[in-house]
Structure formats: C-alpha cells, structure tokens
Length: 302
Image (cartoon, rainbow, N blue to C red; front, side):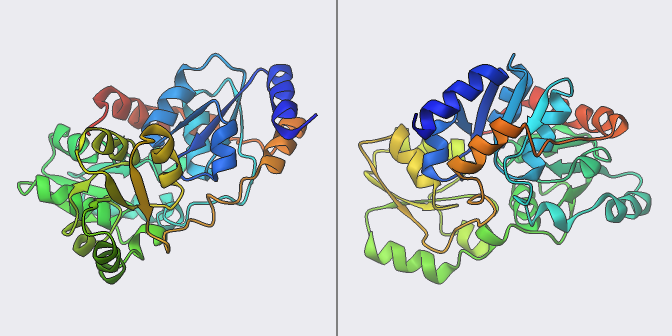
C-alpha cells in the first residue's frame, strides 16, 4: 500500500477531511480534499460534516477551524508549524492597546491566535480586509498584527485612522524591490501579482494586489501569458494547476519554512495517532467565534 492509499484508508476510518493551505508543499496539496486561502479554509472547516479535520497549515489556521467547529477533532500534523506574524501580537499586548483607545474597533487579521481573536470586534483576511474595515462604523481602527496589510487597507480608507501594529510576515516582508525588478527585467511581458502582506514599495510596482485566491481569478481573466507571483513560492503550483495554459514565475526568496514542515509522512502519522490535537478553552472559543462569523458574513473582497 502506497502513502496515498494509506491516507485514503485512514481518512475513511477516522471520518476525516484534509484541508491544505496554498503554501503547503505540492505533494501535500495533491493529497488534500480542499486547497485554499484562509477565508476559504475557514468556511470549509465550518461547513464540513467530517468528524475530524486534518489542517495542513500553521497554528492559527487550525485554531480557527476549532473555533468554528468546536465539536470536531482538529489536528495540526506538525505542532511546531507556527506563524511568526501571529506570534508578534499577543492578547496580553493587545489588551492595554484597547484600554488606551476604547473608542476604536479592533480588526484582527486571521493570522492571529485564538486569544487575540477573542478580543477583536471582527476578523479579516487579505481578500476582504479593505471591505471589513469599510464595514465598521468606527473611524479609528486598531489593526493587528500586519502593518503592511494595514497600510494597504489605509490607502482605500483615507477617512479612517488605522493604528498599525508593528507585526509583519517575514516571508512577504523580505520580498525586495530589487528582487522584483530583476524578475521584471528577465520577464518583461509578465504581469506582477503581489500579496498585500508585501511592503508598500513592492505593492507600488504591482499590476495586481490580491489574496492567493484573488491571484487565481486575475490570472484566469487577464490576457497576459506570464505572471510573476509575489507571494510564497508554492502558490505557483496551485496556479499552474488552476490555470495550466499560463506561466507562473515565483519569487525565489519567498519561502515560508513553517508551511513546509508538514509532510506526507507527518500527515499519515497524524491520522494514525489523532494528534497533535488543537485544544482551546470554551470561553476563548465562544469569544473568538463571533468576530470570525462576522468576517464570513462580510465575505470576499476580491
């Protein structure tokens, strides 16, 4: 029995579904039942009738699945698959900020811990952050934890004061203007797609700024045949499967080591042992569910 057959056997035994983020290694994407971005995976976690969710991603994603499906067993195959940006904002740090600005709405990017979400008014993803901030009545926004995404959102809401948390995604933050311009010289006909977690100077060079799912839509509908993909390198694998008649050029430096921790072997081990399991306090689940549900009600923005 090969690995794929073993996984199918275990999935049936456990009544499990496998969710994988777009930045997962290609071999993990191929095994998953559903591959997508943060919003799509959150919605799938809430809608599935499976008893077990195997989440191939990083910690905050599996926590979100547990918040939305507390009655299900949620497994993160690699317990050390942590999001460094999420770790840049804790509930102990956010609490005093809320006290300092009691009139402000807290918008928490989904790339945050369950404890931080529990303090938020509404969550957002990269696909709907602009829409979410526009939906809240408050003129002052505490936006956590990504300063680059927050600065991008500010461009669309000059009437609001967005207080930027000093967090960032190392993978996107380190994509440089020089690296992008070198790729543009090598591929002069290519359109540049970048993620809004990139620095403002990189965003200014882009033909399209969007979430990973937004990139798929843009590549499908744009007449260009080549695209430079300014996000994690393995997004090009998903793009190549979704839009096989076009060419996608990765930014070589954009590798998230935490997204690469999950392997086919660790996936099998997780199904066999039903661990490592995500556990959250009932109070945190209850408080964090509300801002996530508000986010899903608002829906996509790209």
